[in-house]
Length: 163
Ligand SMILES: [Zn+2]
Image 1: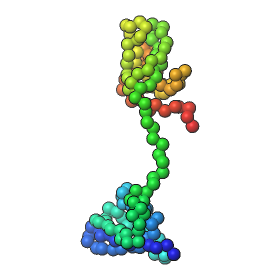
Image 2: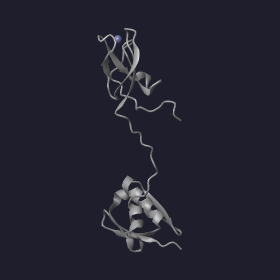
Image 3: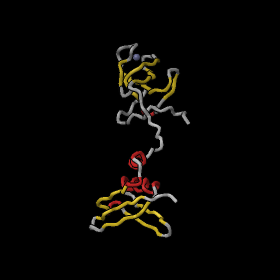
Image 4: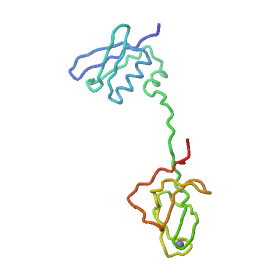
């Protein structure tokens, strides 16, 4: 039979209680405590419910736990979340009213640029079309052929065709 570990907790009211939990249940308790969600657990034929916000302090009697097991309890291997790390620079596909159509590589949050060809007109980042894809990969569109809403927030640079 799996050894159980004593979770001793004291409620805000001062009442002290304890439950004996398996390691998995303890991991769950830790998660509940961190996220302030009710912890419901079945122990043999009893069901216990603990509201973390009513718990003032708690203690895990770790006599039966190895240090590594305790570490695992406190920092359970979380599911890998694919983090989107955006580059500092990206491609801008530029269309200017002077007829020039080209791309440039610039800081990702750049909102306007002087046209490289006519050197007279500004082109503006058009976030309304989202992330665009061209020969140089994904990037943003910059234009002065239409009115560009400057209040739009930059869409994250994620390949729109990615599944
Ligand atoms: Zn131009």
